[in-house]
Amino acid sequence: MSVLVYTENWGGKFKKLSYEIVSFATGIAKAMGSSVTALSIGHVADEELKSLGKYGANKVLNVQDDRFESLDNKALADAVTKAAENEGAKVVIFAHNNEGKAIAPRVSVKLNAGLVSGVMGLPVSVDPFVVRKKVFTGKAFANIQIKTDVKVITFAQNSYEVTENPTDVAIEAFDPQIADNEFNTVIKDTHLITGKVLLTDAEIVVSGGRGMKGPENWGGLEELGELLGAGMACSRPVSDEDWRSHEEHVGQTGKIIAPNLYMAFGISGAIQHLGGVSSSKFIVAINKDPEAPIFEASDYGIVGDAFKVIPQLIEAVKEMKANK
Image 1 (cartoon, helix red, strand yellow):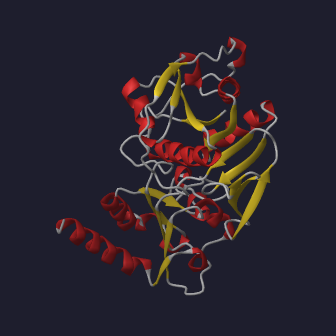
Image 2 (cartoon, helix red, strand yellow):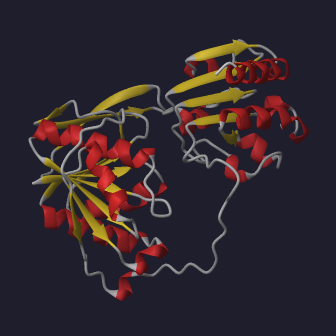
């Protein structure tokens, strides 16, 4: 019996999310008196795989099969299911991102397992198995009991500290034996985004809304973002007006993100927008309207004109960096 965690890699490397989700799985395994098995699919070097042991993984199942480079969700779900069955896993954990949300429901059906998405923190209890998540667009929390023998959960990023728990980790080659006809996705072309911080990876996100008044006013935000090493984002009205790329749109109908720091400039805070950023560790709102809904969801707020605040923040960050 074990806890199985699906660990994504990016170009053969693990990121903070991978270590955070293994740390989270280790916390659950300790509460259950169980062990942690990490599943890695793709060409990842042994030294990189061993790094998962630093955060509590007892075993790493390593799948190296070029066919999975197509990122076919059906085939990936089959591989995870077979790994779970092979390990006798009682809990299967995914990240609550695009890939996890696509694969987890399929695995849940295949294992006849209860599924809860966007789980935050360790279970309230493991017997019965009760987990906590945000509901009503982040305005409340719900405790949900999973009654099935096998449980599938997706883990909300930044809801558990990366915790070192060094373990002697065993790396095992694993062949899930997926038939060729299970791979139905064909990648015809690939365009990699370079030279910018991806929103889904960013620890800090600088975001602008309609209050920025036009695409010509984004220079200050971009300078601030560059100084902070931040990803750039925007609200839906901004992308709809073509002020910024739709790739930067965050919200219920855009990207769902969970950075450590989300800075919202000139964003009123519609419920649809907050639904995409409410899992951020800290939200800082800058808006000249003291009644803007964004302030109800923010940890810190500045009531003021963004065009006056941004230059002051830029100078403050420059001064901080100069004094380091």
